[in-house]
Image (cartoon, rainbow, N blue to C red; front, side, top):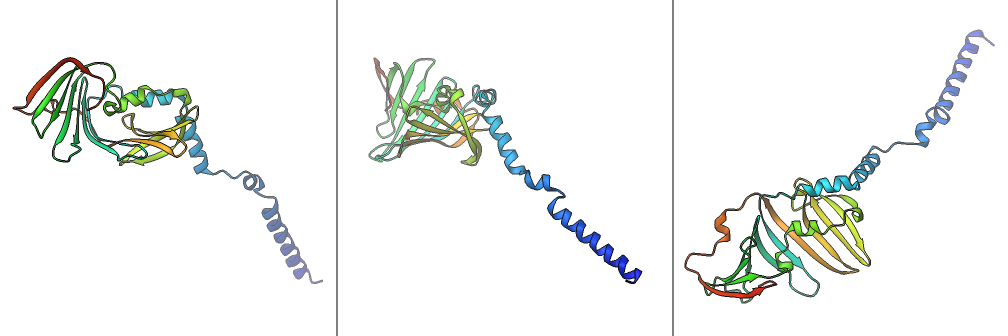
Length: 240
């Protein structure tokens, strides 16, 4: 064979062998154990937010809240959702909801320092004054009340999710046959949504249009000229 063609033939053979090795052997370690950056990131995220110390640090952000305003919505199977506007300051609480007849606004103003509650009807311009006795019930629970009840070791990170335009950390919790989920605002450590129930029977609590910051003192005062009926020691233990 001509030497020139022999050299070409050998060169082609070597090149084909190199290609075969690259496809079958070279880089096999990477192909057998491919790294998925997204999966690794999600795993690190889960490890972080399942750490009890991180959960405590998250919730601690909401402990010294200066005040807030939000729309409180609670949805219970079989009945119409409850809507009320809420203003909160340390030791003070105000709610407004539409009168069942639709002709007025019902207002509750609570001062836990003085231990009193005003229930005001804008239709009659009359407010009843009562002494607070015991728990005021679900209508007057703040986001912090839900946070205080949490069993941190039992909280399992689910995902990140934007709720009501706020970045939240979503957790799931189990107690017997009860399953609940909570959306916690990452910036301020405040629960903004809670779902709990058994099977399809779920109660949904939402704190919408949440504004973080102090509330003017006048929001916790009755309108000028309101008639006050003092019920004294009869007390109040529930909602309106």
